[in-house]
Amino acid sequence: MPSMQTQSGEKVQSNPKSRKDMRQLQKQEQQLDREQNKEDKQSKKNRRAEKRLGRKLRRRILPIWLRLVIIFVLCFAALIVGLMVGYGILGGGSALDALNLDTWRHIVDIVTSDGLNS
Image 1 (cartoon, rainbow, N blue to C red):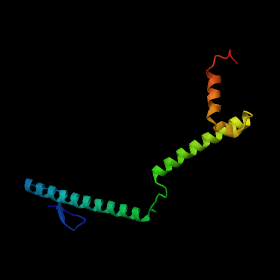
Image 2 (cartoon, one colour):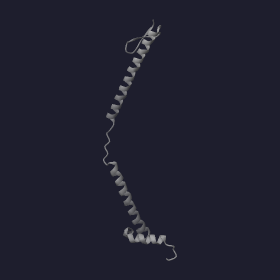
Image 3 (cartoon, one colour):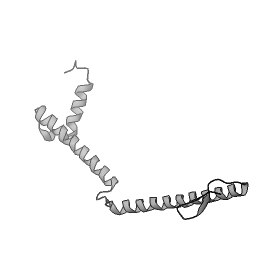
Image 4 (cartoon, rainbow, N blue to C red):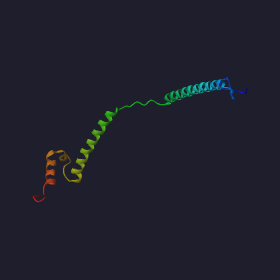
């Protein structure tokens, strides 16, 4: 009966004659498949471990919540500076008057009035 030799040195029959030989051949093939899967899994683990070792650890200096607070504060500061530039330089008034609440009441009154009383 012809036989083949596997990588592990076991002899496997290539042309089974009976059911018993066929089952034995199937068992050997399944065992070889299991061994191959184990090797594949182990090699994947090794590759992942090597990647982790080669990768630089990243440490955040500023936490995300602090970044959000900083962005909010910077947006508010940009709004204030924009108001002062728009009212002071483009509007011809005093830049600090843009921060005065009475100035904004006056502007709202002008915008919401009918325009006939001015």
